[in-house]
Image (tube, rainbow, N blue to C red; front, side):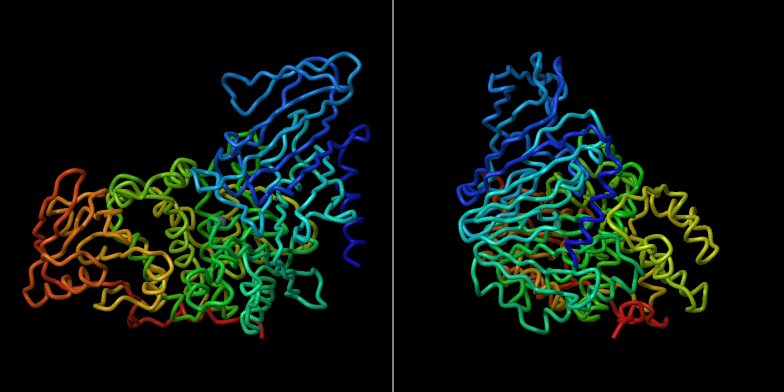
Amino acid sequence: MLKMRFVRVLAIFISAVPAFAVPMTLRVDATEAPRKIYHAELNIPATPGPMTLFYPKWIPGDHAPTGPINDLAGLRISAAGQPLVWKRDSVELFAFHINVPPGANSVDVRLDFLSPAENGTNSPVSATSELAILTWNQLVLYPRSQASDHLEITAQLRLPEGWKFGTALPVAKTSGGSVEFKTVSLTTLVDSPVLAGRHFRRIDLSPGATPAHYLDIAADTDDALSAPAEVIDKYRRLVREARALFGATHYIEYHFLLAASDQIAHFGVEHHASSDDRSRENFLTDPISHLVGATLIPHEFVHSWNGKYRRPEGLATRDFEEPMKGDLLWVYEGLTEYLGWVLAARSGLISPESNRQFLALSAAGLDNRAGRQWRPLADTAIAAQLLYDARSDWESRRRGVDFYDEGLLMWLEADVSIRKQTQGRKSLDDFCRLFYGPPSGPPQVKPYAFEDLIETLNSIALYDWKGFFETRLNRTGTDRAPLGGVEAGGYRLAYVEQPSEAQRATEQIRPGLSVAYSIGLRLDRDGSIVDVLPEFAAAKAGIGPGMKIVSVNDNRYSRDVLREAIRNTKNGGPLDLRVANGRSFVTFKLDYHDGEKYPVLQRNGQAPLLDDIMKPVTR
Ligand SMILES: [Zn+2]
């Protein structure tokens, strides 16, 4: 049944391509993935004369020119068996110039991709001895003669012996360790990573339903695959809740590609018909580990609608060389962050209580961002391609990619506002159905502008939405986050003496300590100071990032020792921090007397709309 549907959809894609087009071919040898090297061979149709081939530079989902060109090696180009000289463009370093000899109708390209063995700036570890996540943009060169939607390519992949795989890329046939994929556009190829591994499990998340949804898991051990039945059930509910929220799907089938390993980098990348979800080895088997990453898969799933199907004009580019414009990332990422938070609760992947605790953590971070004095939220989106790589020292003064968490707060406020204005008859769910909903169909991109959002919101509830967003996006000089949605949703941000379960879980999984809202410090496990909040006692005493706390009131530093000393300031205890700064040691005496402070949401007098929003809409 599914195979038949693929044939029909491919016919639509192919008919959009000029009849004379001959597909490029790509053969990837991934048998050496465990030793961190891939080999690729391409055949690219060509005509005699000068030709330029490009390595993908602007990677969808990264919103930045992160194509890992430093890891391209072994480049050899030939035509009819004769080697060609290539020369890199001295301005556009992702471009390679060649001269195609008379009589040749294609060129052959061989290249290696050096898969990182340690996490660098934009090239995360993606292969272990047991599994690999293969992203095709790392393995191709292509001409810019047509938009990437219209360049056709037929890929083949060889995997290490005994490895299984999952991908949204339609398979033509498999034989032995080799997979032949159907011909697709270069856009679809790059949008369809492959997850492969020795320890592999596929779980049907929507049995008997159309479209199909699969959770494909590759892990470093067999044990890591044994997700409890109730966890699987929650992911099945996620599929139903998302379908109910948007009212349509824009894929033929969907693959959640979950890599569970402590050796790889942990993050997610969205695709039209799949998501590349990378988590800890015990993600599915350890409740604390799952709690800390509970919104990862919902977030990436939401992107199939918000980001892939509907995409800001500035991010819907012709190919992988055209620069992206990030000004609407507060929608692309911010609304996704909000809907991922909503769906995680509606599907039971996280309890409402825990979800509120994580919201309190991010709201407190934003509410104490010194950088909002000079930098408007809009600028964090425009500068996203710089900020993704920004360091975390002085992050509060700089601001980071705040359009994620602050976007969540803005969209929560919009949702609460619609509910109040319409006396509960309408909500942001109605916006989702109108903007991202029917008709269902195969992947396509429908770009939008700011005005399209405003128009759709006004059709749900007439309001000054333009002013609503522009105020929150452009203001500076305030030190407060937009907490209107939290407050009108029945809660207020408050500080208590005990860290929440969510904060404890986070500190257990990602070593470090935040005492940001008492003395204004974020620290690494060993006491190294990561960030200092300028308005708090530690900063006022003269402490800065890069220093390292060695002792607290003459006791050797540990998380507990620091916490206890902060607690005792309430009883008049001192807070003397001995700090190493390069070659010197300095003792800073903090003028602080208010004990421990950790963020939580507490009920205020208003109706708890926040909890209504998190209630499941399916059974
Ligand atoms: Zn995202």
